[in-house]
Image (cartoon, rainbow, N blue to C red; front, side):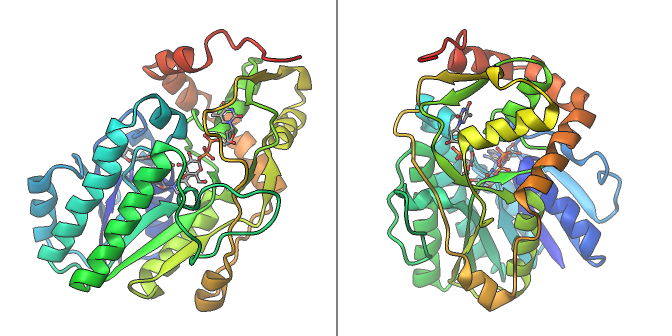
Length: 340
Ligand code: NAD
Ligand code: DAU
């Protein structure tokens, strides 16, 4: 099976490539990635010499490049390429519209032209918007995105649906909850808190810290995606969630206790604008149709993840010392508390 992976040098994409190479001996993967601040070839050093893997640097917004690549002939394309951080979308949404919306349309059009038999769009639970204390989103729930990031992902989902209905393009949308695990860029809350705690620096907790996310280990996500790529039904949407809701304050406390660091490192900072209160997914469709289940308990997965960051200090210190430093300074300032 020849697969074009777009955005494969980021967090989930690189874990997915590693998963496929480990589980599918007959697969051949081309990874097209622009290498934005979030793309990192160090995420794939262990597979870069595998003869079944090839990296191409470029953007999904480059019509000619995408067209040339698809001429090579692929059995499937899976699109991870995106601007993925909510806070950055609040600061400046333009790149989100370019890559997440226009880039997806360029991919869809190229898949149509070259009759790619399967396209999987990796989307997010954030397209459904925010929940109160009760209930879960199903695949039938309305799209009510709140952040510019979520709106751009919802727009892409609608384009995918339009290409299915209008042209019969064999496409699938997956909507996953929050991922965590190795190689996650340290702007996202779990690696940010782990790496700050390792360095005895404050953990910036937004607002009251009671916002809830449903945590899914990235390897469970990758297993679901591989299954969907193989056996999913065209035109369908699949929710992928971890059944593991945790308030941010509890995640922060668990990281600190795992590392034996004091809770006084938790520093309450100004809340995110339009901060979604809670996400939760009903995943019964995927479980019943394809027999998938998340395997890692959060406490085990988080402990392993803390261990991974502890063992890969060079990987994250290089990132934190690079261009990310300016973003961190702009976003968190001097980390002054809003309340004790
Ligand atoms: P990430 O930011 O770690 O990686 C994104 C990758 O896309 C990077 O390698 C980057 O270089 C690449 N990229 C960006 N713009 C590109 C372009 N124009 N052309 C080619 N490559 C480009 O993101 P992630 O956390 O790995 O997320 C991957 C996908 O999964 C995204 O579509 C995201 O919306 C979705 N998702 C993420 C999560 C999560 O918790 N991280 C949850 C649900 C869904
Ligand atoms: O739900 C899936 C989504 O999960 C993906 O689509 C996104 O690509 C991914 O970034 C993630 O979005 P979130 O906004 O939920 O993740 P983030 O790690 O940015 O924040 C998780 C929670 O932690 C959220 O309630 C905000 C809070 N937070 C975050 C940061 C960065 C803090 O309290 N402090 C912080 O410094």
